[in-house]
Image (cartoon, rainbow, N blue to C red; front, side, top):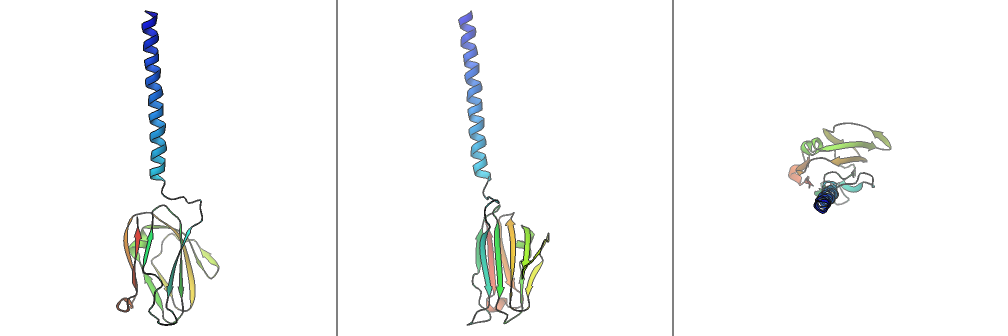
Length: 154
């Protein structure tokens, strides 16, 4: 009888040990899968330069790829040849804005509707994408000149 109880107890201990092993392995794997971005690291720099020495309608980049949950710094600069009004409503609604910096002045704003550069200057937006998708942006009134682009968030 004692031998039977001892065998039963060992089987139950093995079941419990296996359960905890399974639980912790599952927990570890799920933390790796869900944790795409690390907000503790320095934000990845993205640059958009509007206008150049050769054309008022040049854009340094038209497609930006990023991932949800990662920190980014988008530096938008203008050569000052034209007034550039950047419209990206869908993208701006699907990011968490950490701050905006304009000529050394930092602004904490919850939402961006558009960004307008009336003369030469730079705007830096610190943000985290929160929803995947393909978001188009354009420079108002200059779309026909090719001043359009896309933010791709995975």
